[in-house]
Image (cartoon, rainbow, N blue to C red):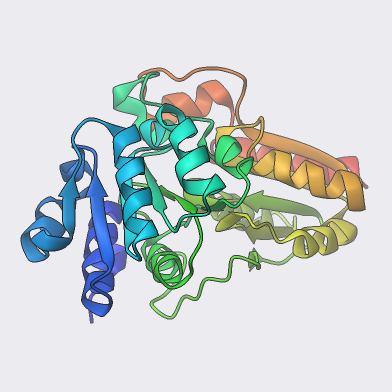
Length: 316
């Protein structure tokens, strides 16, 4: 059995695409000249050259090509860096994909601070926010290799416009090969009554680590992982907030418009409680490694644990 948890996420993406193509030849791999970054060269191009299209450095055109192919019954996965997959071609996505309700799968590689070496121009903190605001769009952010595979199989089987955040790095395993993905359900990774901690994607591993640290100190964290930011499982959040009375959110994104905003929208309407949002404040990115950016913006593991402690104390 293949141990996907030992692979970089981009390798898992490419090899899962090969499996999807072998199950259904209508699945296509589209790239905008970043196929090596996505590992689809040589993984997909070498194994299924007839299902591989490099559109060149023209992301908006790639979306248009994908929309046309989807209209003809194909299932295109269109991948590039998250900044280009979301910001650069947002209008083409709006009209050709979402408004037309075309079955295009848009993949944003290296979201948020995982783009550290390439700096502010390539570092996108807004993709969850702007894609979540798009009618008809589903927005997913898996946390490890097994969940990525489950999400991709779901994407290939369900006809809808979808945006997927793809962390390029190797991620420590949170789930096993039997992982199932349901966009309507959050995943509870820890149970507690002191504070609710909500995370998605790249940050869920750090939220789990913080929850374990807090548990050792006698602070019970109710940890909810949201692989789907849209649709959003409101009921699990409401039920948890009723038990704890305090919520902390953390995401590899701006605190404006993404997961934290989704949490505040739900609780503001259904069960108002105090919420602390962790992530990137209203700023652009810069070149820097993970530890530097966590420290500067205040959403690393130690910041998560400290925020949970403060929120738990605030409701006693």
